[in-house]
Amino acid sequence: MAKRGLKALLLSSCLFLTYLVSLPVSSAEGENPYKANESKLPPMKNPYEGDQKAAQDGRKLWFANGCNGCHGGTGGGGMCPPVINKVWVYGKSDAILFNLIKLGSVGLREKYGLVRIGRENVVGDMPPFSSLSDEEIWKLITYMRSIYKGD
Image (cartoon, rainbow, N blue to C red; front, side, top):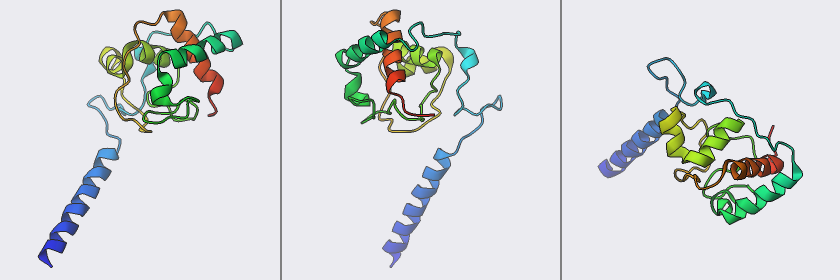
């Protein structure tokens, strides 16, 4: 009987701690760390927005760089977040996506102080793709926007 009570207490404690960790907390400045502060990023606009040829090129880059290995062949996710629904782990602005691809998630956090605002299917940090040119990154983003089904 004592063992069962101890197990129940441990389980309850674990569940309670999990609940506490999942709650949004405020930083010392009173900001919600789960909200992206895009003012820390330079303003950026995708020069290929709506360009079908750029989206096709971006699709080729998607597979050539292994994006499909983590985010799925059609962007529906897998071990990492999907790019076709309304949940964006860091936010979905051009500036955030560009810097996330270029710097990776660790670089994005270190350089701009951004933190995750979503928790969907995040297995680990996204690696940087700094070997891609700015043009290639914009084409990848154009492809992602072309398959996006949110909003």
